[in-house]
Length: 475
Image (cartoon, rainbow, N blue to C red; front, top):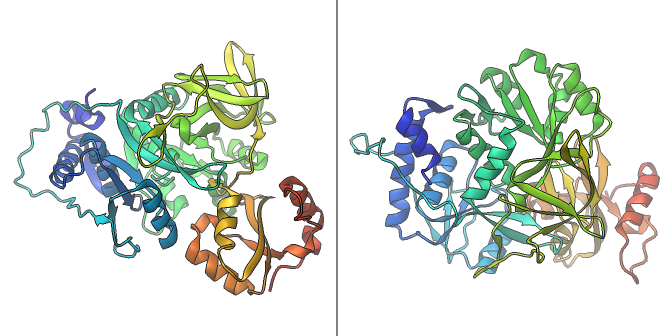
């Protein structure tokens, strides 16, 4: 297929791709080709490139250049600890990394790739020349926590990302004059989806300002489209922010259960939000629903989008397939696609299907495993517990998510240790991703937990909710 950027650049090179910094689609095409040449010259074709970078135009250029030059683009959380990065490199046998600054601790045995994003002015590139790319090969790896507690590398082709964007366009269209704020990190499937959806709609992408002032960015850059996790929306309203002062047309909210009062406030301010259920393995969205006064009490249901197939197993689990389905989990050598004989992938979520006004609707009832979502981030308790228990001064540890207005679920640690609260925070900050760091630490003997049998997290959570006001934190 013809490259998305190349197609727009050929037909309308002066169309604006980004306003901060100002960049046309013609200039974007020029820079992607320049970076692609460097990737090829450094013999990275058919290899994987780990990318440690912020949400900048250079990051987007690199991602699109990787796809064009057949380099597997593998962005990772830029708050990853040194030990976690080393484990990732070792597990998947990665050999190349790009970092957008020198503050990261790069593993010694990996090649650090240097990229120049500023092509010389006299570099001659025919912007009208068509560029064809293979949209069926691995385009990128998205790392997501699975039920095993270790990050899984979800492999997608460009075709799946485009199918996701086209399906999303049916209820949240993007057109020439629209501006989409890149509010989600590109290393997340939702952030990468913003980039592809903007290109599909030939719109304009807006990068977050350096101070990450979401409220000001929405107003100052005249944003029309937003993708938010509930925590971001909660913080906006906590600042007395009003959408009445904006030209926002669409707000897509996903990544966690959404408090009804946040959606009610959106409606009061004249904006109808869209809620979404999705997963990395399906390139982002599976079903989406526009919220209004008539369905505000039905927040667990959404219409299945085009290019997706959904059914429910005999055990009530949501099974999915379709053009947005991933290629498989990459294990360092090959792809493993865990689907059944009909090609369906088990999401490990529970749900029900129904037909409403001729449309297939999915009602999501909850997760099968222990994973929960905090601030829009997937939290796998076992992953955090494993790292905490690597400290010899921590004898026992259980991680749970406690319902919270700001975070959706607040990460809470039950600990048996001689360490102080300050020492625990310091250890967590140095060894965990930012969103994995527990917000509170409680002594584990505050609860009645029998370690001789399998830990029942739901029972532990009930105890915490019943005793929350009477349990003292570790000092």
